Image (tube, rainbow, N blue to C red; front, top):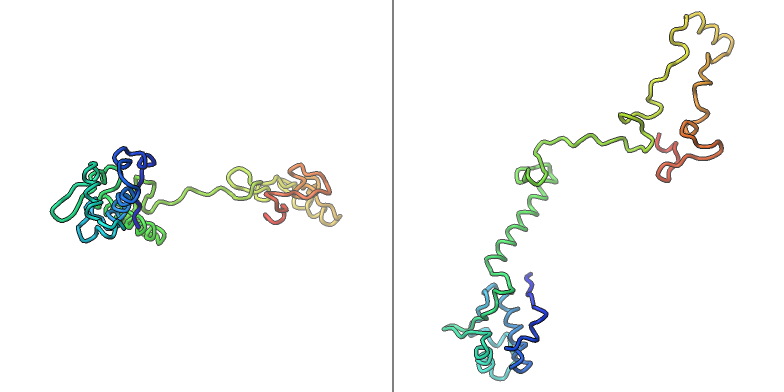
Length: 206
């Protein structure tokens, strides 16, 4: 599909204002036809009836020639101002080829084939993405969670017999004093409240 650019000032062009409305519209239809068929503004004689309903299309074209918008040729007419605002057929073909290449490169890239990728545009073949930080908002340094952090356990450095005595007496050896009442408590959440992280309970992140 092609598009025709119409300057908003076109209806006030002094050359068009000298002509009847039907012939002014003929000029617009002529530009659309040339864009659709990629003729760079050339309208062959056999296509003239396609761009106007004037009773005498040749006489109507002659009026456009007279005001300087069209030019008569051996095979038809040429719109003199066509390439001022409209892309040439070569430009259109180049754009279509570029769009086709972009679509192909996108598909190959999605299949992990970077043969058409341009490193200058940020795609490096075989590049390993940077490490993604822990998605859990309460992650600590180096992506570790509180449960992953090392803890100075009270049994370290104690004699084996002392630990056995604690077990025999039902003592926890001081572990209860070190462990928070709940995971949420370690982050300052008051008792009886549910810790929400991005709208989800803390327990769902574990």
